[in-house]
Length: 280
Length: 268
Image (cartoon, rainbow over all chains, first blue to last red; front, side, top):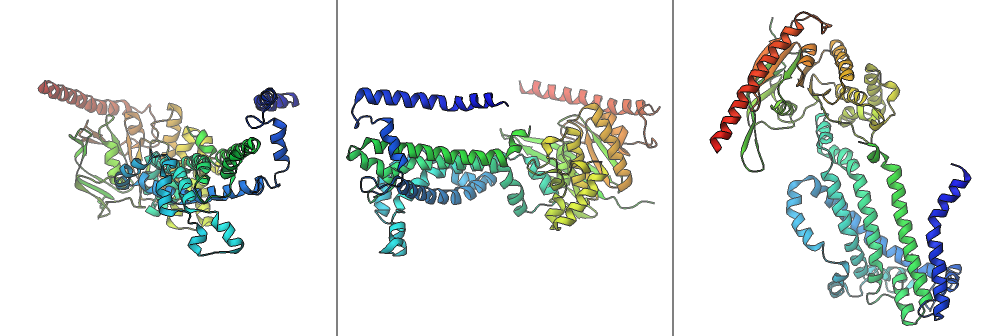
């Protein structure tokens, strides 16, 4: 591929975003009201100084980091429960019949609809409450992990991962299982050496979608009472102060990080699971 | 001199229950012996229950009635002494050829170096040693089946069950693989039970041919093939033998068609 065609390809990716930025800036100049629409320059300035404290809430970077830790906590919990459960439900017909009706009943409930119940259960309790830490740096960190938030994020990530895992295990071709059994595989071998690798493309795909949903649940989770940090909270708080530039900067951060996490999973999928595309 | 057969099948029956609740007889009262080191082919129309029969012998399916004895022991689950090669693509697509062939020893708990040495030895047997690090999707259909066969052999089975292993291959590759299978069988002397719907394939390969009826599968005829090996398709007794087997199958097809038609007529 020549330099020219590389440039053309790269250009195709950035063309539409650039046009959008131009359009945005023209609109901002026309409106001339930074509460309704701040200019591109004003928002860019926030990104140029990402570690500067904003509206007495700490910097953009700190708030994004806090949000990431929250998402990862709820997400990892969802992975740890949904993957083994999905494998069992996909493999054992009895487990599927026992649990699927129950699980399907909760799936249509949007994560946000859980908020009142979750608040009634956990209130503002956090990991700091659990470990009985009441002061110092430990308190600051642990108190940011509220049970209610972690739960909402968990619910968001749980279903995509569970559904993909069940689907992945169910669609493992029976010839693969039969040939392993004939070769002397124990039940343990079947799980570890056949079912898990055969369904891992589907599981990882579910994990990618689940992380996307978990990240989207973030804003609603961070609007819960007791929250005093995180990008979600930063956005809502900036709104009350009419700092639309911070709102937009926060939104762009959420979008960029979500896209990055998605890209991370796609790279893994392309590298590790090339065989799924190449197998007839 | 007669020795005890390696496999003894007695009054074996298999019924399936279909989705609408009716019982479907797949195999009815199959009784036969397989002598050690014999190459036996089962020929029958498609859907006659030959695969079900083989799957029961492999221990993958439980029989509704009857019994399967391997050297005097009842077979009720898969066992290492009985290997199987499937028609469909059965290699693990995420493992390369070497890791696929060493699967049996791996399940047995053999250390890596030992099982890989063994896998290489068997790959050499079919001239696939240069492809040890290739992935299944990089191989042709014929090469994949070669790998599937040596994967079964690397587990040292006494009996090799083969369920239309060359069914999905083109005619030329099929003939090549038949030759190769005979070469392996002559050097390694396993007992082979080979299911096919190809009459030509059965005559070319088998010491004995069992002809199965349409569903429910029964053994209609057992024919000894006395042609010397290596067999030539131009051999004078090749044609008449094919003629004889086809006649049995044809007669069976006509009766079963008439029965089916009568059954449908009765329902009206």
